[in-house]
Length: 133
Image (cartoon, rainbow, N blue to C red):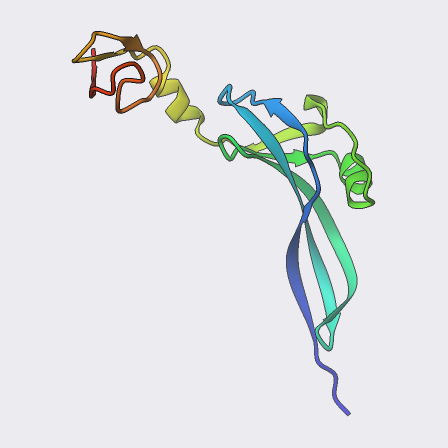
């Protein structure tokens, strides 16, 4: 008789529909909540899970936060608790450097003179190509 077993790591997306304004990029985004774990499988069936950690990824800039374990367990149980900023610990910043570089940089339309600080390639007013100042 022989047994087929293995130790695997996995990830499961948890349901979250909370919309927020991101502290990193200032964009409007959604929390994407994930649970990571390690499991022991017997005949390809997970028998035991341990090392659960909960993470939040911002949909706007891909910043990653570690979520408080208690809040994560409640979400894994099917509850919909509201995630506050105090429940999050920054693990990896997303496009922060890119957003900082773009902030304060003015661009103007060569066609109509419209000025913006947004990162548009074309003018939202007339459709002409934007140039940097």
